[in-house]
Image 1 (cartoon, rainbow, N blue to C red):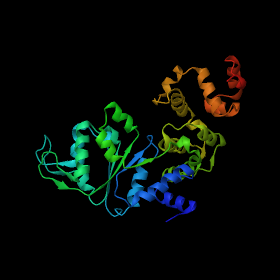
Image 2 (cartoon, one colour; image 1 turned 180 degrees about the horizontal axis):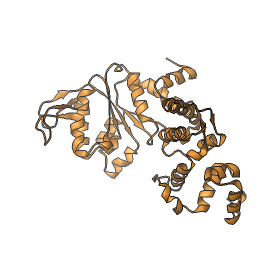
Image 3 (cartoon, one colour; image 1 turned 90 degrees about the vertical axis):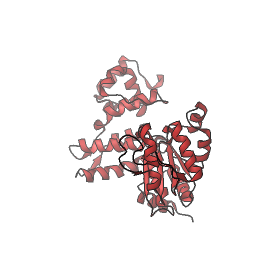
Image 4 (cartoon, rainbow, N blue to C red; image 1 turned 45 degrees about the vertical axis):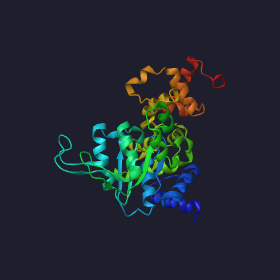
Length: 332
């Protein structure tokens, strides 16, 4: 069955997925094509791109939609408790286990189980997970009975699992067993057409929540977002808008509400593409002033007024500093 672009966008919105780019629509088309299968899905993508939304969309579009959608962030559970969370435990299995507990595989029966950050699962649990996938049975911690389970697995990671296999951090046999249907969700900076629809979606969401009526968004605010690298992806855009709505005093979203925070993250990201480091405002003094100025001049294509606004200084002040540091467009 084929759908028009408008029909696809309408379906996406009904599932909480906002976007108009060809990249995100192509991802959604793939989701539709594999949703009816029971094969394992592996969602790849940076933190904040919306992997959980796509996992839930796969579930809702599947034949298991009437069953439970159970989720867990494997990185958020201590190693000593992860097996109990996944497979359950029997009474007396360990100190504090005062009664039997069903694991997530049992709770997701006839539905879908979403394991986020699968790359963080420790080696011993990887072995047990592989056995469950192959046998479709679990044994609770402290138990001996093999219990059949019927849950579709949807997994997600922000790591390159193939590289983790080569490093010895992830089992090769498990990798090839779970990498059945890989789906890559591109970062927001690679699908900038989605920024404006997401911006308006979040403005509406947070305006209603805070009982505010945003009447205008500054042009500088929009232009900044359109040029910002978004290392935190959609989640970071949501945080930006939430902050701006909360701080808006005249129902206008202004660049000044986010530029200080954005400076630290954006500068760090541009200097460290491989490992993002979030900086506190106190760290600003350690970023050379010339580098900060150059950074925002590049973002705004050397529009001095807009770069000055982003830096929180007057246009004339910025021009003086450019002269001081001998910053000229044709020399950069």
